[in-house]
Length: 503
Ligand SMILES: Nc1nc2c(ncn2[C@@H]2O[C@H](COP(=O)(O)OP(=O)(O)OP(=O)(O)O)[C@@H](O)[C@H]2O)c(=O)[nH]1
Ligand SMILES: [Mg+2]
Image 1: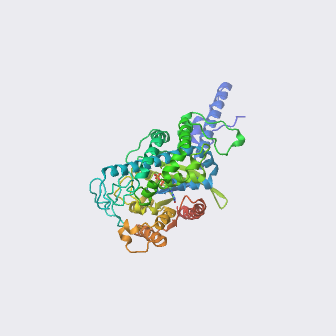
Image 2: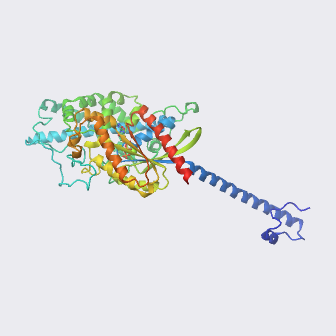
């Protein structure tokens, strides 16, 4: 009896390949061997096809969520909140790496304070006097083309410091007694300040990015593992029982040196921060500090201590610009079913926005983050453009983009904590946005005013009659943000199931 063969009875090819009647025993063994090999290869191909199909099916089931918005709007901070919610142990593992970013934020802030003080000192030396009106430096600028709101052109120079005012209310006018103390603080802090560029190089891997604003440091996805640990070429071995515990601080020589300098300068930094001249400049808004600068300088005794490990709150306040697009994957449990969510956190500066487009094709949802505290701020990349107006223009582009017409759209009107603080400190919206007019300058009126502008943009660019979900947020507030993330997750998933049912 013949050994079962892979050849079928009715197939013409099989018929052609059928072994001859007078096949020898050796030929038969060889043929069976070849058939077994062919079967093995065929099974392997089948298995590969099956796996590919399964992967395709699974990837079709994944949710792709883009975080969009201008630079400093809070996208990466929101991403950290997702990480905290769905992969908290990974934040613990990278906790020590954030020390370098926070040191960098502190050093840059001190540098900014000292250089602003220097520019006012120069003014004092020149001993000018004149009308108390801000004048924008550089060539006269017409402002952005067709703004959506009516912002006033920036009164500030691109580096964020006020242009030289000739105000008789000069904040240093009565501060000559503290002037020498500023000079000695500057001298004592100069070694720390000059470490700024080395720190920047360490974080960015020496990559300078043009056309993206401040000249701040950009980092690519996964920098925590690459830049700090790989720079050392080693990672501290940990017993497996320690898995998931906070990472041991990595002994990077530069970071340790800066930690030492910070500890030695702790008192000087505290003194500089509390200095009446600095207080005066800040109160009179002649010195504008980044939000994170205020947060970290307030906590300097803790941050400058030798055994400092960043808290979760510190990590949420740390500032580092995103370069390109970085993907974060989370397993999200919905109704007992685990679904992979791919979160794409993008760089929001103008020079980075072209990198978003390849991700538009298969996005399911967008969270557009707009910082509504920024009504008195201007783009670093283009100091003529009011930041709220830039957000509205960007939101118009997103709402009207044909590639995104079926995407579930969520709007975060963010930094409401900072907005509230600005309004409470007496800052007037109409000073920066003339169309605000004589409305009441309180929190509720202002947030509804900005919300109405975003809703109007959406209404005017809404052929598909999709719903816009809006939330007032402060994404550094973990408890409130996690509740909102829960809501957003459910609404995105409902929208996602509906669109899947239509396919
Ligand atoms: N107080 C306060 N600070 C916030 C809020 N959202 C973000 N921040 C801070 O604002 C800074 C900028 O936030 P990021 O999340 O880095 O901004 P981004 O949108 O990712 O910026 P790019 O990566 O440049 O596009 C960080 O220092 C955050 O801690 C908020 O709601 N309130
Ligand atoms: Mg970012």
